[in-house]
Image (cartoon, rainbow, N blue to C red; front, side, top):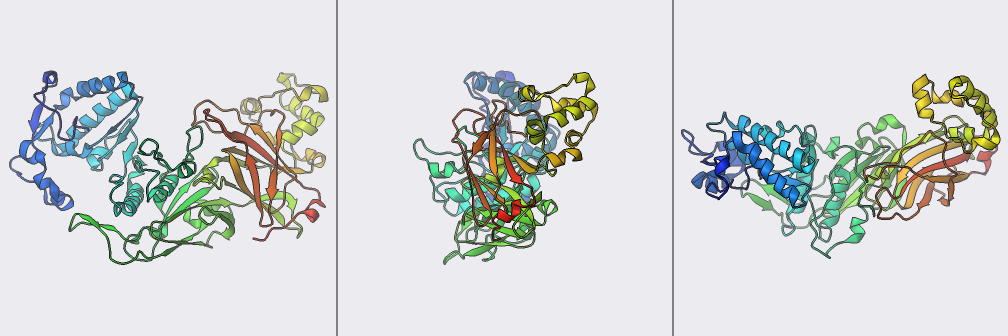
Length: 552
């Protein structure tokens, strides 16, 4: 706890003399009671032990030494992070030290300094919602957004999800909200797992040894221990901001987030129990919890409408794909405590590729359908809008590329022939940055007559089924292992350097446009399962005549 322990430190304990601890009371003359607002929010403070016997506290001038000694001993014991709890208490102990805000800042900064020096900054701030706390953070960024996960309190689970989502709307602008741990082998486990999948938060469990639901955990965690984490903090969609998703009997909570390429929406039926301030406990209404319908639209994901006019929408619960405009909805029926996670991905035009009706083909990278936030597996997706891509240029247009490259980079002494080109590695990123030359200058219009292929490049991490959408079946799918760092946080990125010889992956193209590619199994090694895929279509005028046009 920020005060040492929940009721502070033992001022008489051996070894504490050097810190000069004192007994401090939160209620001091002339105010012998907590303020009416505090008592309204938390009546139990009226009989909190600190009001009667005080709290052992270390003066601010000695608190840095205390935290340094505490955290260095933890480091010596092999501990690499802490959760610093009960942080709000210090805000009431500032009498004689300049007031609550001043002493809070001194304590928070001392704690952060020690955590940074001893534990690499690994800290979860908890019970820290007073503004004196959250406005004081400098070196720690994670803060618990709600009350605890209570495994033995059935009425608490829907309320927990409501709290973390709506609290994150505010807290997420200042800190990175933490949505707490949960247990994978629990009646409400899927509800909590789905919330964590769209929350943009850490995913961790408090499972007892050998008591796990691996079928759920595998929807959240890869074999190498990494997770598919969204880029922002989960927030309620606009149409849920001012609705009562616990008590109005009809509204599903929807939570949106963004991934590197696509978006995600979580849908939850949280109707039923709610926190009753009058009785200071969860209230469970009589009767059955109503079924609700979540209407998920692409526009629920902020900013998604600017990416296109049509979207591939994949429901994890329904295991189905729909093509929608930004204002159309996918309707999902949810029973009590049920949830769904929906991937939303814009359709991209495949310029030069026509379907059998002569219309421009469309493509979308959806993600891993067996993972809850499978869309986050797509790290990058680029459509080569010219019929000639860099790979085709290097592999098939050696002489033209050599002419262009030689003109653009004469000091490099570039002179390619067909036998040596395959083994040549050219650092295009360095040359382009150095010379301020656009990559398109290397494969401009004169080359288009030499290649009638269109390529889509995708950087992806994962194993098993990868779901894409294409209104026209591609010719083939090439794959190369991504070269990334050993850190599990390292992500595959598309490269402009000459690639190694690719593998060819099998794929299945279905009548509704679903395109499934099966990725090889991952290992437990960090950085496993990262691939650079290239999908290739024929742009020749007769190619579309043989293509299957899916129903949308």
